[in-house]
Length: 305
Ligand SMILES: Cc1ncc(COP(=O)(O)O)c(C=O)c1O
Image (cartoon, rainbow, N blue to C red; front, side, top):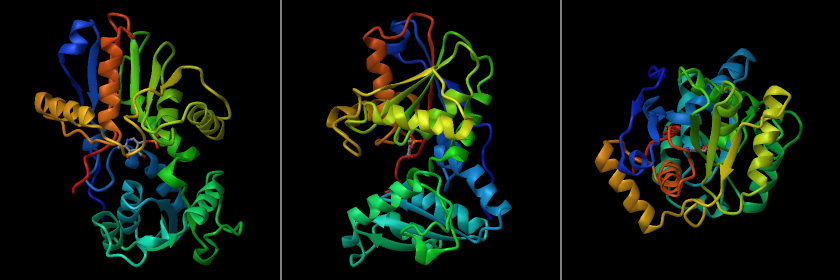
C-alpha cells in the first residue's frame, strides 16, 4: 500500500532579509513533505485521477514523460499501490537500448512498463492526450488499450480540482495575499487560482523559456475544462526561467544553496528554486506593495540522485 499522505501540509513563516526589507511576508506551504514517493503537486494532481480510475474500473494507467520525469515515477508508485498496471511512454527512442537511468529504473522497479517513442511520435501522442482523451479513440497508445490515459505532467481537469485543495489549506486568505507556484504545464496554478477567495491572487513563475501566451492559454483551457469558466485572479511571470527548462545557472544554484542553508528547506532546482528566486527578485524590485503576504507552494523535492 501507499504510505499515508501528510495532509494538510505544513505552512511555515519564513523570515528572509530581502522580503523583510520590502515589508513583504513570506510563508512556505510545504507540499514537498506531502508524500515520499508521490510528492508535492504530483499527489495533488494524481489523487482525483486515481480515484476516478478505481471508480471507473480501470486496470491500467498510461502516461508520458521524459528520461527523468518525476511524473512517471509518481504514476508508477501510485498505480502499484492501488493494484493497477502502469505504462509509461518515454520521449527518446535512443534510450531504449541504453542502461536505464535512476529515474526510469525506479519507475520500472515499481512495475511500470516503458515504451520509447521518437520525438515526433511523442509529440503526436502527448498532443492527442492533452484533450483529456479517453482510451478507445485509437491514439498512439492503441496497443495498450484498455487503459486510462493521463496527459504529460498529469494536468487535466481532474488534476486542476486536486490542486484546488491547496488554498483550502490556507485559512484567512484575503486582499493582501498572493499564492505562488512554479509553472510547467499550468495545472497547479490553475487549481490554486480557481480556489482562491475574492481579493486574493495567484502568481505563477514559468520554468521554461518562450511560454508567453501559450501557458496563459493552457491555464485558461484547464479552467474551462474543470470549471466551465475562466478566472482573472492570476498571472504568470516569464522572466525567471534561468535559460530554459532544466537549465540551472550557477547564480540560481547559489541562491538555492543559500536559501536551503538559511531555512533548512531542501530546494528542488528545476521548479522550486526558480519560484523562490523570482519572488526574491520581484520583491527586491518593488513589485509587491508593503504588507503583501506571499505564500510560496514548495511543489516538489530535490531529485534523490
Ligand atoms: C516540483 C514541481 N513543481 C511544479 C511543477 C509544475 O506543475 P504544473 O505542470 O502543474 O505547472 C512540476 C511538474 O509537474 C514539478 O515537478
